[in-house]
Image (cartoon, rainbow, N blue to C red; front, side):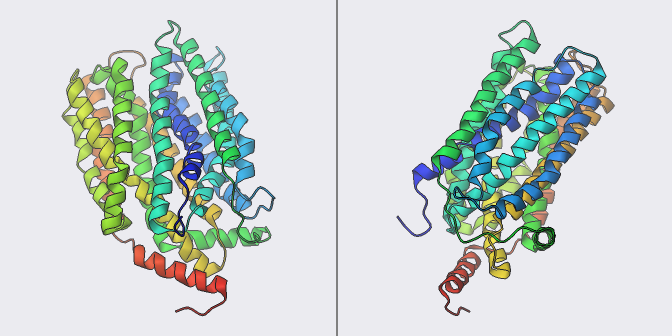
Length: 450
């Protein structure tokens, strides 16, 4: 096996846990607002407020969890123990989230908020060490992309399941509350099993002795991480896209149901997008090998400035057009795998400067940004639904649908354009990463390097 290469079995076992992450994210982003607003009949503003508060709590705990895992000393490694202990609570909390009591609005609001906070506390315990663990699997520039892509491939599977299962299961029940409860039980089992497969199946390589934990060391690490210019570029680019994507994903089911008249067809829409997304991975890996990750991601962002306008072209009941649009959207979105791979490369430069491997610190900030951005998108979605006159479980006015189509379409294009302007300032390519890794190898060997 070549230097830095990771066996396919390890990549597969590591990637399995991403099924849980994606299934959870897809189901919650697409259906939680819809379920509580359209089925439970809780005010969209209250639903989005509860979700946003829970996500803010979830976000601020990520850097802390990243630092804890960076400084953990155990015979099982720094990351693996946290992945293992979070598996069962994740599944149980997910089930409870779609099993609210039949109660008044205030009680339902606090139930949603409480279960959401507990769910995402355990998700932080799992996700931050898990993501950091992936950055440690290999030091090779292109191999990192394959690790991310295989992990993302499992994410596609989980995302499709999370998007398809709620509608496919819930519509079999005359009582929608019962249908969503059965769905959440099935997905809860999937979440727990996927996380356990990774925790049991992958051994963590222990490299050196972690530094002793302290508050000054933690704060200094935050300062260094946030102060890294190139990390900020990748981070801000992803956060911009996440805000828009969360806002769009929260309302797209309403667009599909009330404007396109394709609610029962939604599982096929989600499946087509997921398969196209996965099919694009070899293409983006080849682009990355040819022109580097920066130019590859810029190409994807450029496509993202064009493809979302497809929402303006699809007409009600035009199933074939919708599927063709989803193919284009999936192919363009596949470039996002190059962003996480670029973030892993930046950690090499940080080690060269600080002498520490701080994957947890970086991906703690990374997940904080993703979750805070998603929270902002969800909060905005509830406010937007109120402002544009959305009425639960009723045909929507033309004015309401016009605004919602603008959110899932042109707004996404604008955000991709901003990301394109931002990411063009990223500096590092394959030669820079190779030089940094050579210097690190020389330092570890105790020999001078240029």
